[in-house]
Length: 160
Image 1 (cartoon, helix red, strand yellow):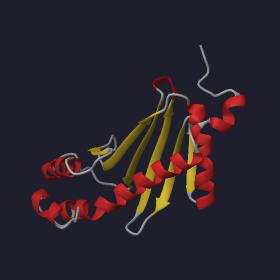
Image 2 (cartoon, rainbow, N blue to C red):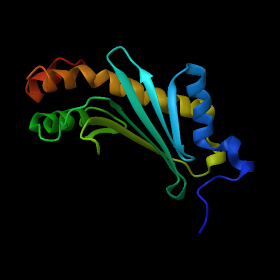
Image 3 (tube, one colour):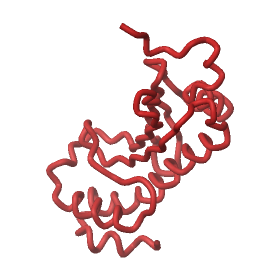
Image 4 (cartoon, rainbow, N blue to C red):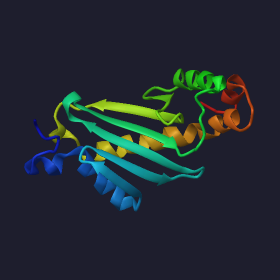
């Protein structure tokens, strides 16, 4: 059985190690339960954002999921699915979904042919993109989840 851990010689190129440097420089709280996965808590103007970044080495992919920590099950709210569809039709990269915890979440992946070619700046951009996209749509989700608006009404409040 092969180990999922990266050899010591590759540790400076490991995407999660590089990402950890960004997180530490921002003084964000994080947890790294596995070598290839990290959870980050990012304060935003609306709420704290939870970001999960996974390095899927066998697939050659970095996956980022972000969501606002909201302890409610939104999976039965049909308007949320309508809103997800409306938002996903307007954004260029990534998409929103209902995650395993039944929260609205943003998901984005990039394909990486050689993990040694991953640059610090690229990871910083990807992380920033996930934060911006999540934060940008939070008010629209609020209008549907707590404001009682229909998806079609809520999306009109957002300026794309």
